[in-house]
Length: 256
Image (cartoon, rainbow, N blue to C red; front, top):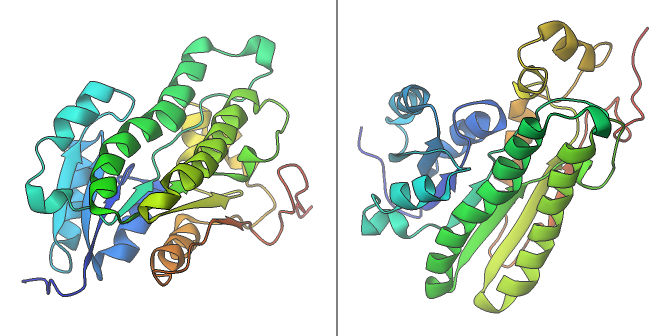
């Protein structure tokens, strides 16, 4: 099926193979052309095959924590695909939930390398192109952990505090180039997040959501679409989304 090209935006989404990134990819596909990114090529191909009848899809397969892979992958894009209208910095992770003195430095490296440095690596490349065109929109996936620290969340929270600071810095620095910068900050979302954090221990992962109805990836994807679809002169600078039972990082109404 040939996709109509009229008024379609080109959107690059990192971390497209699972969770919020996958849900966002699906919800944006009908009205936009997408560059989907991730480490798992098999999963990227599955998503492309699923959505190719409603969208023009381009795959970029790389590890976002490796700046050389990011650069080399981006160089494979044809010129028409480099006219990116929106960058959604979704890729991120949490590894471990430990007191600071018990933390695994390998977990710390993974969180900082992906959540902070990876976001910067891809943003630098895309922003160079947006600045030349004097138009664009950056949407960073933050977290309420970027404004509230909770026990044992130390380094993960630090990485999301960094995302918040980078987002605000971007908004200041890019204002003169007609580039919008937004942040979407969810609370508890039931995706692969806790499975990764607890290294596959589903008993610990399930405990996180026990007694509540958390957000799911589609909930956050709908918020992403709202930000994407806002009029050109409107910038949703920051939006937080929580499940009804959550009031903060630590105040959660769990059913007995």
